[in-house]
Amino acid sequence: MSAFSTGKNAYGISDRSGFRYRLNVMRKEWTGMLVGPDEYEPKHPQLEPIRKVVDPQALKDARPDRIEPTTVCVGVPLVEGPAFRPLQSISQIGEVTVVTS
Image 1 (cartoon, helix red, strand yellow):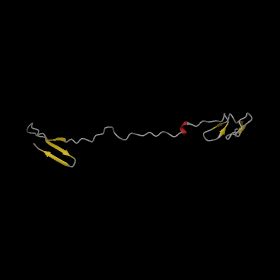
Image 2 (cartoon, one colour):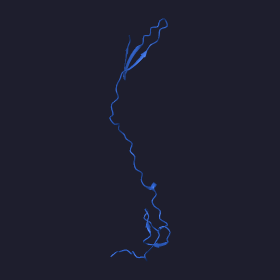
Image 3 (cartoon, one colour):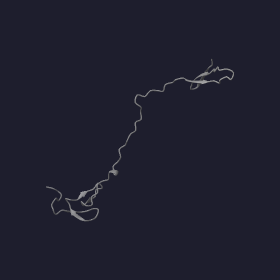
Image 4 (tube, helix red, strand yellow):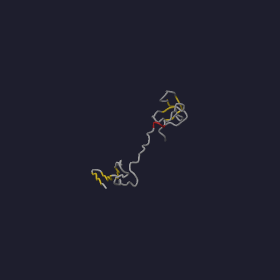
């Protein structure tokens, strides 16, 4: 035995307009309102929560930086002759080493 009426004479009142509709054709909206078939509005997709997109943080097969000496040639060509004697400098962070030839 059912606790609710399901017959053809069962009517309901729309929560939106107040019009009377047959209860078996009325629809329940996502807001919880019971409305007639001509008043029904489905939930808009923009009202759904968006998916969280996670940016990758780590590098695959990461390696530490290589420490290589930097060679800088410094020199001034002489006016008298074609000899060019560069100064060779090897430097690292915090120390400077100058080698002259």
